[in-house]
Image (cartoon, rainbow over all chains, first blue to last red; front, side, top):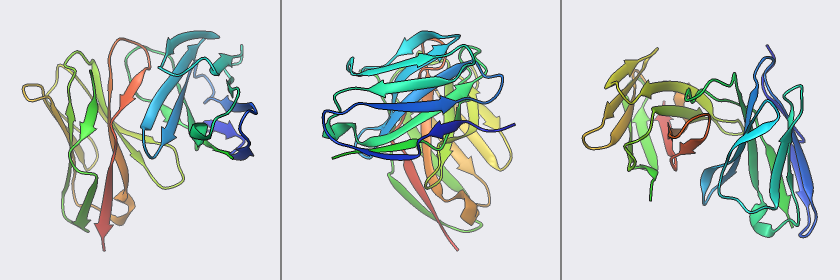
Length: 114
Length: 112
């Protein structure tokens, strides 16, 4: 089985722009979660989608949004980028069962905001 | 507030020795505790998990211990190898589904 695929792997944006990141989960996985990783804050939960519905949401401003398509692929969008949004954005998939914690992560999209 | 934290930011061990990575948590309502390994340039990789109603769980060369009395979680790696060099995160799940709260991470350096 192919693993979780994230695109693009690297990108550079300027303040005020917006960005869309894509995630293709492992085949058969219906849950997709997004995390932001920074040296200062570590890994922080953004949101989780299951069957095109957002099931959980972290404590991020409304500039951060996501969606999931019928094929389980997911996108996240960050609008009006700020310098502090520079981070590694990680996507993880899971079959979807509750409370297992076994997430399969992609290699991430590294966003730099100038 | 709730938190999942680690005692040591960096741990250096000799190849072949056993490694113990510790983690403290403050919220006793979690259902699962998990250890992840993150190698440079890669996403975190699931190592092992333990349910809140268990004290110990063993995998291949790894053992996780859960002490709910003192809210402490540890990961033991037997016969540490250079390939074990990575950042290790403890994490917890509380409240359903896949919302995982990660600790700050411990960097394990294996000395050949």
